[in-house]
Every structure is written in C-alpha cells, then in structure tokens.
Length: 250
Length: 363
Ligand SMILES: Nc1ncnc2c1ncn2[C@@H]1O[C@H](COP(=O)(O)OP(=O)(O)OP(=O)(O)O)[C@@H](O)[C@H]1O
Ligand SMILES: [Mg+2]
Image (cartoon, rainbow over all chains, first blue to last red):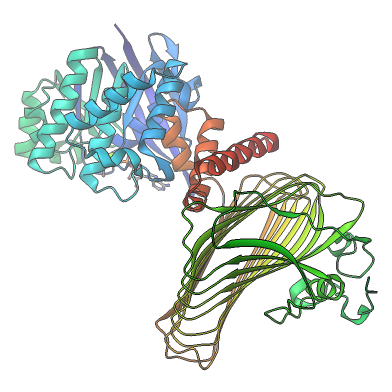
C-alpha cells in the first residue's frame, strides 16, 4: 500500500523575462489502487505537475512538498524517483537515437531491480507485453521512440508501465492521438497494470472517452495552476457538457 | 636511405591545411627531423584466401597512383623503398573481412609507410585495418577500386596514449565502383588523417563514415577531400565525434569540389559533434566548391552540441542513473556509424573502449 502526497506544490519555470509561476499550490493524495482523473484547459499546468513529480530539471520547486510513503520525493534525483516507484507516461515521449528499445528496457529494469533480470524470462516478458499492446516485435530493435507514430509512442509508454511495475503511474494525455482501437488496447494495458500490481493512477486527459475504459475514482478540475474542483466520475460528464468556462473566468 | 631535402615544403602552421594542427606534437614527421627507421609494421592477419595477396614490393615497380601536395606524403614517398601491397584479384568475392594489423611499433623512431590496396574489376571485399599499440607513423595509404568493384575499408585507430599518426587514405574510384570507408579514431596523442577520394569515371560512388572520441589532451583531425571531377558520381560523408575533458581537440574538415565537368553530381556531408565537458574544442568546417549548376544535389550540415537534457531525463525517469544514461546516449550517438562495421566482436570492443574513455573522463 503506497501513498503519494502532494501538498501546496508551487512550481515556476525560468523565462527570458524571469521566472513565472505555473503551479500555485497543488494538493493531491493518490493511494495504491486509486485512479484520479485530472482534467483542465490547455496551459493550466497539468504537464508541469506531472514533470515536477518526476523531477524534470526545467521546473523549479518554489514551495510545498511531495512525499511517497513519507519519503521526500523532491530531494530525490530523477532515477531515484523511478526507483521509489514513480512512473511518468509522457505527453511527448522523447526520441533517443541509436538506443534500441530492447537495450533501453533491459537497462531500465536492471536499474530498477538492482540486478539484471534472468534473460530468458525477461525476453518472454517483453514479448508478451508487446503482444498485449499490439506492438510489432520489430519495435524491439528500433531506436527508442525514433520515427514512432504518435500512437506507437503512447503504446510504448504503456508497455513500459506494464514491464517496470511502478507504485504510482502518472499518465499525461496517454489517450491523445490514439485511434479507437488503440485507445481500447492502451486502456486494457493500464487496467491490467492496475489489477496485477494495484498501482495508483493519475490520468491527465482532455476527453471522457478514456474514462469509459479506465474508471476513475476521483475527478479533479485543474485550472490556472491548481485544483479548483473535485468530485466523482459524474464531474467528468459535467465538464464534457459545460467546458471549463466557469473555472477559468474566476 | 634517402635524405630528406625538401625543407622548403615544411609547413609553418599558417597554411590552410595545417592551421589547426599542433605541429610541435608531430614529432618531426612534417619537417624532416623525425628519426626514421626502416620498419614495415603492417601484416596480414586473416587466413589466406584465393584471390587475395599481400606482399612487400619494391617502390620502383609500384609508383603512387595519385598526386598529393601533402608534405608528409612527399617525405614518405622520398623515403619508402618498399610498398605493402594488398591485391584482390578481379571477380573475387570474399565473405569474411580481410584483416590487416599494425603490430605495436616503437616511439623512439618513426615509420614512413607506403601502402597500396588494389581491388580489381568486379571484386567485392571488406578490409579491416587494426592499429593498436604505440607508434610514430607517417602513412601514405592508396586505394584503387577498379570498375564495378566494391570495397569497404575499416580503419581502426585504437592507438596507445603516446602515439602519433599522420596518414592519408586516398581512394581512386573507377566506373560503377563503390568505396565505403569507416574510420574510427579513439586512441593516440595526435592523429591526423586525410580520407580523400577522387572519382576516375562516371557511376562511381563513395561513402565516408567516421567516429572519433577525444579525451583530455588528445588531438584528432580528420580532413576529407572528395574530388568530383567526372559526371554522375555520388558521395556521402558522415562523421560523428565526441569530446570529453580538458584540452581535448578535434578537427573535421569536409572539402568537396564539384568541377565544371562533374554534371549529375550528388553529394552530402554531415559532421556532428557532442561536447561532453567544458574545456574541449571541436572545429568543424564543411566546404563545398561548385563549378557547375547541373547537379543532382549538394549539401552539408555541421552541428556541435551538448547532452540533450530531454533524452537524459527520459532515460532517468525509467530508473537509469545519470552516468548510465550518458553512456547510453553516447553509445547511441556512435552506434549509427559503428554498427556499419558489421563485425560484432570489433563493435563490442570499440563500444567498451568508448565506455571506459567516458568513465575516465568523468563526463
Ligand atoms: N519556458 C516557458 N516560458 C513561458 N511559459 C512557459 C514555459 N514553460 C511552460 N510555460 C507555460 O506553462 C504553462 C503550463 O504548461 P503545461 O504544459 O503544464 O500545460 P498543460 O496543462 O499540460 O497543457 P496542455 O493541456 O496543452 O498539455 C503554459 O501556459 C506554458 O506556456
Ligand atoms: Mg500537457
């Protein structure tokens, strides 16, 4: 049982005209097995929240705390956060030229477990994970994200989620750019990870579509750098009908 | 033994061709002060194959196949009385690479070496030259690729840390012949190589690939020249370099000359450098001279950058440490070229050496 606790998180980024504050005090608690949907207008700071939790160097933490089972996440290096059990499926996964998917996955799992996996079992696991997400086996030899289509990148992120088995997964617009079939396939992947490892999930999305596959326990409305409303699944339907007008004019 | 009298050729460092090279560190290869021993360190190390011969021939019977205005080449030709000649007979196809090796030489005297690789009509072959150990070497390597022939030449500079190597690798590529060169320079104190190509007839093509990795105090220079003097020839150049540590210095010069007669030329050259720490310097100078507009294409690109933070973040967000993430990125950067060698054992050896250089440099 794990708990990721975000308290009063304030984050700024450096610009030519000095730092600007993007997160203005975010409070959120995610426990194992829970699924939290975060919805909000473009530019409201959702990816900033995701990246800040994962430790991207671009974001300066100016206030607040993030802890995982009491341990100070903000003190950890990026790889330490992953080792502690935090996983970020990125909105724009990064291309890494010359590094094959299979080499990347083996290096990552070795780092996370502290020892190399048994080769035969691991090759089988990777094969199964690829199959489950309808990823062609040839992708194992391709370079990480290089030349992948938008949807292929997202499937590749969820494949990592299934193989690396984190405690808390933050999925940043994993559903954007997926066709109907891919959306179902990817959602099933997330649901498998939830069922097998009882992970806590933060699902950042613009669409209620994915929430029909991955049922959220909580829906949070994110606007202007903080959470402005919280509710159950019914809140998502309300947002779909009314948009964010009532939150952004405030 | 010939006396080296051509002092008037001695470069001063102001010449275009020498302006980057620390002449003092050449150990006298360029100015006639080097003590030259009569040494032939190049040997054939792979098993004999039909159609392939390797012999030391008299220079009197083996004239150079190209002209050169390089002073070191001139001095080698003055001095060398014998030439190491590798001949691949017409129509020979060898599945396995042919290995040549420079056995460890000495640092107290220099070797002036002439080498000729002759690939006769329609022969297809890969030749791998492994250079390791200590050396003080001036090398005039000429390559002839006859009509319809295909040569892949891999040249590995895995020299010991005090080695000095100034070499020209000049290929004359004939009608419908292809020449692919892969140069790897990861060891030595000073290495200055001139991979140059002249097209002798239409339909010829070349691909010049290379990687270099310089750490503290090392100077590696690679100076291409592709002479498009006939119509319808194609050239591609792709060199990638990484530098780590104080005073690491690399130079890449890409001269491509498209003469008036060279209609239908297709050329592109690329040089990318990865600066892994402060205090290192990468010079990169692409240079395209065009005398005819009737060409298929001509272009070049040169970039010098640092580690991509986004790549490192992505890898680290999967639990990979910073050091390992950097190692992966550097390996990935070089992999595009190294994987072209096609020999797993050598590729692994080179990557391991790159890893250890990177670790030593603490980048
Ligand atoms: N370097 C920067 N300079 C100026 N503004 C920046 C910089 N980096 C981020 N921002 C701003 O921070 C805000 C939050 O960005 P973020 O990517 O977190 O939004 P988001 O909620 O994920 O949006 P979307 O739904 O479009 O993905 C945006 O307005 C963005 O323009
Ligand atoms: Mg976003």
